[in-house]
Length: 120
Image 1: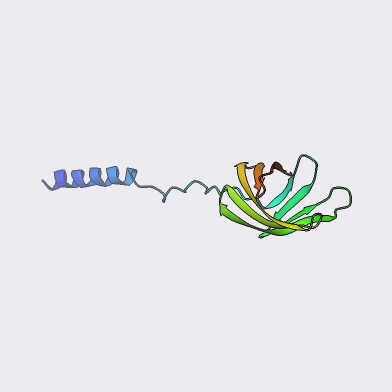
Image 2: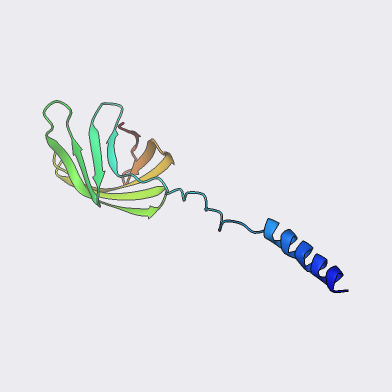
């Protein structure tokens, strides 16, 4: 009976050792939500920049500052901009929705709409 018990224990040990792994499986990489950080351009070529909560728009010909302000991300797809136009000397609020990682659709508080494309 000792031989039979020994054979069963060895068989069980071999079966269990075949089930062992070298460690936990690595998790897939975490995808980060797209962010508005960076440079964006409108259809006229005017460049708007989003950086660490500050917003600015500059002309393409002489890089003159046209508007500046701040922005906050309300969600991964929605950004609110509070800006001052240096050209018109007015303040306004603009809401932008990131419809793709490379396109922002924006609406001013006066109802005007425009789109920005990520500058690559």
